[in-house]
Image (tube, helix red, strand yellow):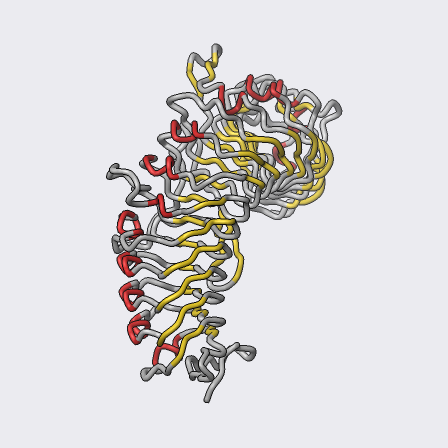
Length: 465
């Protein structure tokens, strides 16, 4: 469908879904003029609309809308707001450049608000806390200033009109310019499931009150200016699956992940941990990895996306995305599967030997420990991690021979062992034919090895005798 249906012009419409078509141009005025008293559901997402501008910037709908979805279009200018609010508001993936100065007065009864991936800027008013928001997604814009503390510290919000209590479940402010510290007065019974502040300018320490958020599943403070020690106090959170803290100013040891306390709880659901590009140092005790039980179980299915509970009347789930180094490249994972497990400790100052206990993490898909100061041999126990798809131990001080057990890693797609002090040859070259990208280079002691035969890659850092 390439045009707005003219047959609807003189009808009273209460429910209209024209999503996933190829309709372009301006949204006709009769949508908010003729249907102002009847419309309750409007979904125009995934089209090519370029303009939708009521005169005052406000849709004169008389009823509380169930849904207003304008996402994935080419809409520009100021974001229009429904006069009587809407339960579900989605303006994401457009080219909007501004909001009404008092836009928060139009979301009093809104549970889901997404303005993600637009060209919006300015500060967020504290009046946003007078809403009933469960999901707030302002990611990938140019917002700045402090994060309104009331979003985190207010807890439950009571809707007198609805007679229902609401609580913020998802806070996604990724890819903006928010600054200052994260609100610290986090109440007991915090209901947050996702906190994503990746790529902002948040500084200071992680607030210890985050341990009150017992339903927290995804915590992403990557690419900020946090200066703190490793948050071992988060180990008791039963649902925490993803913890991204890379590219900050964390320091000290991370050995506290296991063995320091007597508690049996140690990140029982953790699937992805990214501590890369910080200032962590020190060595690991032999049993370091034995407490990461969630990475020691094989999966028999393809997994489900990590997501928050289904919202009352909404169809589908809110899904967050994360950015990690995967198979040698920095990439975005739009859906985080429960079967995807990854550890990235690269670009720190970690030292000592790599514990043999790492071999127990049999569900791990990605392991990156590059650019540290590890010494000793590569543990043969890595051969037990048969789900491993990407292994990067480059730029360390590892020595000895490459374990024959690595030939058991039949899913391995990327192997980087370059810039170490490894010697010897691998007698069974079958593995290297399966690897699509392999880096070995000079192995030290004047010896080189043939470690891969990748015909599809022209510029490999591999050498032969």
